[in-house]
Every structure is written in C-alpha cells, then in structure tokens.
Image: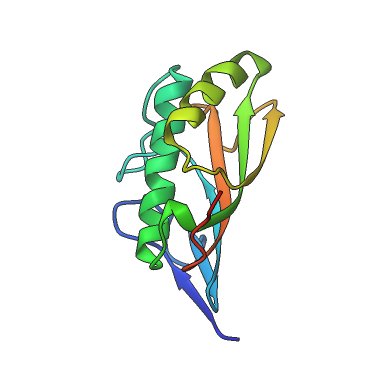
Length: 134
C-alpha cells in the first residue's frame, strides 16, 4: 500500500523534510508525538500540564481531521508526561476529553521531552471509519 504523508494546517511542524505528523497507510493512521504547541511552535500553558494536555489533544484532533478521521477513530494512544506529579491532573483531563469508550492507551512518565518547556506529548494510531462501540 502507498503511504500518504500529512502535515495539517494549524499544527506546527519543523521545516519540510524533517517531520511528518501523520502517515496514512490505507485506512490506518500513524500520528507522531504531538506537543502542546500553537501554530507558531510556541508551547501553550506554561507550567499548567492540564492546558498543555488539552493543546496536545487539539493538535491530535487537527491531525486526524486532516487525514479524514476523528478522535472516535482512535485505536491507541501513548501519552508521555514529565514527572509523576502530573499524572493525576492528566488523568482528570483525559476523563473529560477522550471519547468513550476510550482507545487502548499507555501512559509513560519520563524525565523530559525534546522541548524542555513541554510537560506532555501524545502519539496515536487510528483507523478511519472504525468508530468504536461499547
């Protein structure tokens, strides 16, 4: 199957050729780790991990949309959080924003991310048209 490489408008990306937000293979989408950046590449939320996590999910939603999918098509997510102290706050936000039933997921506590101003990063796999049922 042929691959499509997608860098959606509205989601910051480094210079062309260095990074792809979404690789689509058939109906399956592989979404790179998304940081809590605004369109200009500035981290959102400062030290507020909840605001950062919400921004990362906004970016995920935009990335999925550019590939023809929605968060309901998610089958797996991985969330990276800097520091154990942020786990409870991220779980609280997750309860509000992740579709029900939630996709399979992994939460990993890390010492740091590529951008030291970021406290959270989310990557995902989705299957277009899969929609979940409980």
